[in-house]
Image 1 (spheres, rainbow, N blue to C red):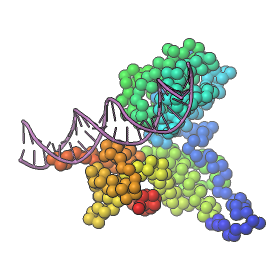
Image 2 (image 1 turned 135 degrees about the vertical axis):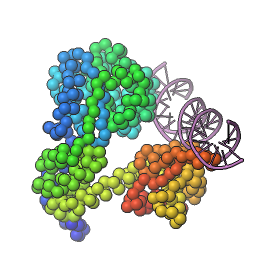
Image 3 (image 1 turned 90 degrees about the vertical axis):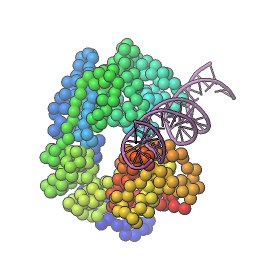
Image 4 (image 1 turned 120 degrees about the horizontal axis):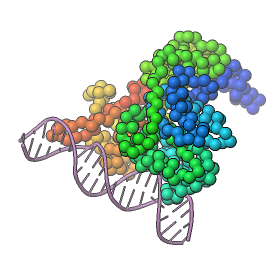
Length: 410
DNA sequence: AGTCCACAGGAAGGGCAGGCGA
DNA sequence: TCGCCTGCCCTTCCTGTGGACT
């Protein structure tokens, strides 16, 4: 394993690392946002999307498209690949594509921010807050029209935007072409929520989903092939077939998630490198699986506001006390009990507590993040409440507990 | 069948910070 | 400077809910 042997000004502490042969040839190839020259097993979907967008090359109206599919099925990568090709095929910048991830907090999670982001992409300077939205719409129309371009707006995770601000904004976007005189706008909406469409207003549904493309999950063989291709350029030496099989099998179990497969391979490579091993072994894959899960959980919790962390701390504290009489996994907590514990934690730490209404929302948010499970139950005469249990695995719990205890223990 | 409980969760609005334009 | 706009976090008020209990 690479270790810092001695600290002196003569020997740079990184020199050993720099001299050591890396297991990676090109690590970027192993990231999920890398767009390869060829995307395997998605030719049918790419053709469908290309055919839907192609008319704009001849100045005709093209369909708005909805792209569906679960996580890691190649929706984003294929959409970006197609719109990049489209931009290349168009003459003199006639087509401009704008990619926006609607889940990006503080970037495109509200109507104002999304419009501001659009204007920034068109080269305008917009303040983060302060202008009325209709002013932003007007500036967008004027800017787009002045450039006489066809705009392709790729809205990734469009369901997140819908959940946050409703479909009014999507309706406005679909009506934009009536306002534009010289320019055109086409929308490609990407979502992994297969039921998203059902919640939309009829008018939005029909104009936004003129064309729909479903991305099916990859099977283990396809995943293995994808990994093989990436590993050829990603790693210095070839990988054992067993390694590829294992990564593919794990990812296939998780709804054919190619992103997961790539992450596993990359993190396993990083672990092998840190341990000074020349080759990746199955043990590295196991460790990578654990590490990815734990990192995700810890990062998610760290990114939550303090009050949300206190609620989680209260849930864990309460579950700990119940553990004495029942199994950890079986500890079912009720909103009222959690709120009482939350209030006592706030008191101990000298923090002003929120109302039960707000805490109820924070519990729902923790549930959405997959950190806890909260199910609404009725206890008959004893009222209606949420039954809360931990969704974090036991192996990760100690790190989570240590983090929260470090922040909120008096 | 009606009552009751302990909430869930929607709606409305307050207060704050920050920016714009007259 | 001031009025007006935004997003965000929060409270208050309210109605709805489902099943045990009477």
